[in-house]
Amino acid sequence: MARQQARFVCQQCGAFHAKWTGRCDGCGAWNSLIEELPREELPGGRVKAGPDRRGGRPLGFVGLTGPSLLPPRRKTGIIELDRVCGGGLVPGSAILVGGDPGIGKSTLLLQAAAAIAPSDERSSGQTAIAAYITGEEAIDQVRLRAERLGVAASPLLLAAASNVRDIIASLDREDPPALVVVDSIQTMYLDTLDSAPGTVSQVRAAAQELIRVAKRRGFVLVLVGHVTKEGVIAGPRVLEHMVDTVLYFEGERGHQFRILRAVKNRFGATDEIGVFEMSNRGLVEVPNPSSLFLAGRQGAIGADEATPGGGRVSGSGADEDASAGPGAGHLSGSAVFAGMEGTRPVLVEVQALVAPAVLGTPRRAVVGWDGTRLAMITAVLDARCGLSVGANDIYLNIAGGLRIVEPAADLAVAAALVSALTETPVSADAVIFGEIALSGDVRPVGHTEARLKEAAKLGFVEAWMPSGRGKRRGAVAAAGFEIAAIGHLSELVERLAPRRALRGQSLGRPLIGAAS
Ligand code: TYD
Ligand code: MG
Image: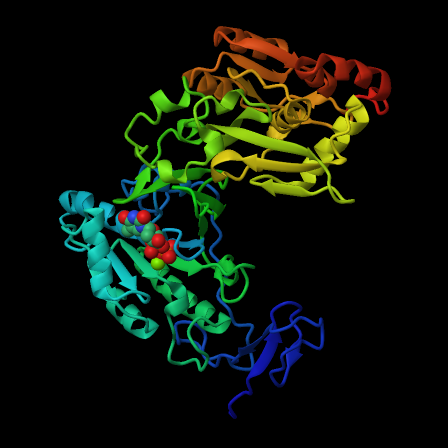
């Protein structure tokens, strides 16, 4: 039989092309054509695909219950990492760790690989538990780092390689290491493909080969991927659907701490975060992030109690901005939001600056929150409370570099804005949470108890929150909190600036009925 011709398939719309072109004729997407060689053999190389393709084997259907053959999860010993992965690493799974260059991916994974090694050696007697394959750095560089991290003594297998064929030859065996880190997938190449390492087709094919071995041999494969500014060109985006778990490691350059976030997880929840702090001896876990995010805010609260468990490294003053000095909490424009990140409550400070607009169009600068939601809240403040927030320049910052996605932060943002506008400080002992509807009503949010418990732990005694139902009030009373129930946004304005609220009542209140 004559060799079938290669064809190019658009990865956006699926159109076939006989030749490669930069732009798909079908949908107009650029750079979306990928060469696909028709396979003459099916995977495994047993059955030749003949003209009669219908002779498949019937599937052996099973029920949903039955003995599970999955081996237990493997803990790395880095609790934050284990939690983000859903309680440990699942053998045979592929994990992609993405993040900007220099954020600390290699550091984290070297620490994890070293941490997994000794504990398991004791229990199972195996020699090599983890392998770290670097395509970016030289052996000496990694050794130097290991020394700095204090893990040089761990029985880790280290190799510098970038040829996938070599890597597979070393891993495709009966007793592979339990964890294999490939740093990074952009440097790996298959010599069967013509394109350069780092191109989409190389990244994709290399990952596919590695993942196949991981599944067959049952080891945990961790792929490191760099993200470009847009997260597109050869970035981990093309891999997201191929792997089981996608973790993003993020953080602000000027800040010490890093956040590991699961954006896809076939074996756990995706809303968990792990918080680390970059120290001069690598990444240190931060078991109690609230005190880190609030550290220095209120002289009495953050500073003394900072992270029990040794997460906080003292003397990191260089990066702390001026507004975080003691007493800064008593300035206007700051409110503490009692948020949830996955199953864990996290307290963060919302900072707002409202200044008269100099140019025609008011400026908006938002760090750590959604700009559209900010626009919505200013609109609600204007329309329902009779303020004129929207005409001003607004700068909003989630202190410490955390990115918040919860709508429950609405009320804290509104409090920071109103506080900044009216130059009235929000009570330094208060935490705030609640979702704001377009009508100006404040809606209840979940996890009230966890939020309040965390706030109590950090010394807060007041909570500004949606007016709740009976059961919740009971729980709240038990926590010994002074509750300010806020049913409508104008009540918040009234708390902060009574005169303006009066004007708001007469102007804006019930245009639309209460939101359902
Ligand atoms: P790295 O893990 O190399 O980042 P990535 O693999 O994501 O590109 O870490 C980069 C930064 O971390 C580097 O700028 C130096 C810093 N760092 C520390 O501050 N302390 C340390 O102990 C280590 C190992 C790195
Ligand atoms: Mg690196």
